[in-house]
Length: 355
Image 1 (cartoon, one colour):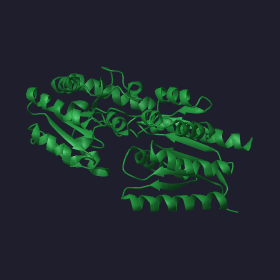
Image 2 (image 1 turned 180 degrees about the vertical axis):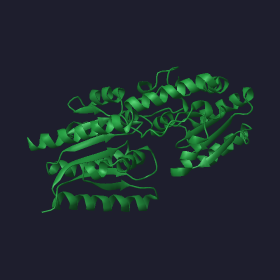
Image 3 (image 1 turned 90 degrees about the vertical axis):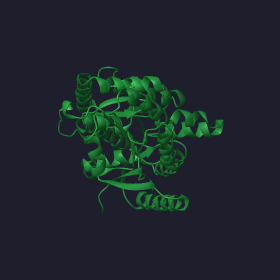
């Protein structure tokens, strides 16, 4: 008889959720917990995405019908992602398999509040029926608890593997990096006019924007603001190209309007970059303003420009914040801190099923 396995349903498209699961694979969790990965979503057009979903549902149905399954760990975001993953959760629950529902969507509150009453009821039912709901921050725990009071909720932050230390003083003072989806939600169209103000006071300042999305709109705004020289759009980057951009920067900026707990901020802090970001989602639980990062209000372009200018103009402050940020990641958001907590959740689900 084949050995029992566990299943993880994930999103293989570019983004933070994929980064989380790839880290699980890299750091041995997938192998050590005997997990089969089932990708329910991938990059591509509508037809391709539907084919991926259909194939994932068929494979999932076959696995839960023919193999002994310990638990199913489902990564879900908002909108279509939540409803797609609800299909997998319902199938698992119908066979009595424990479900860990792991919420990543940065706009979950907006998603829930935009739904009609019957859809909100379905969301609440999915949350309360899960064996465990995993959220990224305490603020999310409070929100999920407010809409699904019987849900079993655990806070588990995203994590990164901390790379070898680099002296923050060796990083370029005036090199700023953004990584993420180019668009309004990530604050790119706040960042560009704010950076135009930064360049007025620090003419040598440079900004690299790495990511896909509304790149043409971003480049048009860059030209309108006269930032053709100081700003460069690098397109989607990952792997070695992403590591190279991080190594060439001294400051990381993410002026998002909505977030959960962004992987890019964790990675930047772990790498020893000083971070400027916004007071949204779980970020204020990660960063203490002025200690291990600088925080501004979402949409406040003047404050964003001032924070960037402050770090560019004060290398000692930049180095101090960068060092404190890295120490915070090592203590609370590293693989050594977070993976044991996830393994404990798995064991509790398995123990509950055995009981």
